Length: 306
Image (cartoon, rainbow, N blue to C red; front, side):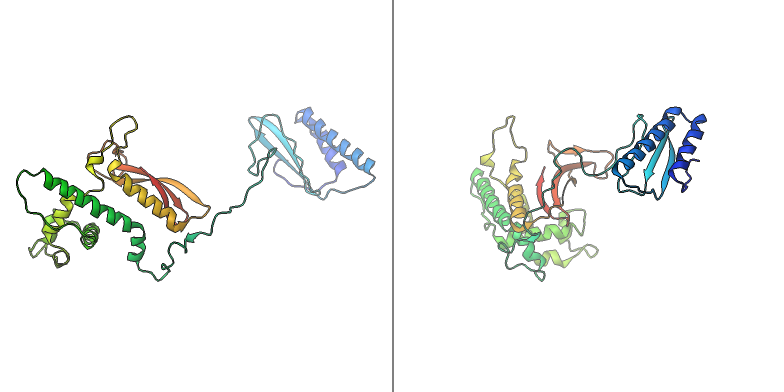
């Protein structure tokens, strides 16, 4: 009988339940008989007669106990008779409490036209990049010149002072550093090598090797004289904290995220000496720094923390 679907009237169902008491516990059959008797009495009291179009009897095994389930397809309500052994929860809106879902009332997703009126779909990648890195370039120029001056002040005798760093120099330096990531060589000097098998005129024509190494030697993001006191609340990322703050401010300033946001971690490969570096042997980047990012559904980074 289990798993079969039949069309019978209520009297036939009652007879089947009574006849099946030999193989099933009597309490289950009696429960169904009581259910049909009460249903008939309710219909008579209402003075209406409704016919059941179909009845589906299914029999399940649940933790070693037989369970009968009756689904009435002829009415708008669904009644189930289940054993006290428990059942799986049904997914759906929570019941018995306030289930009002407030609609998303944030601004329209996309770039803020009031902040970037000159940016459109035809804008170059450089113009978009400068939205986020203009202040950072000026920070690099300022702090690198400060560190270079501090270096000259520590020298005992007279030294040859090279020109201060300017915005074109810093932008060219960053551009070459990004390009080097696409063309890996053994040493920095190999990018300016004149050997036939290594020579690439791009780097020499863009910036002199000594000028690139000079900027790299004095590159700084913060003033060393402003080093915070080491204590329990010591910020171990203080030399880069200003860069992170400026990036997060720019992320929120120029773009409105959608209501669909996700928080995930990003592993950045790093083999330097910092105390917050992590070692994860099962990862391809076993030595790395973990960054948590808040991202939009389109992949836009709205906020990040180290």
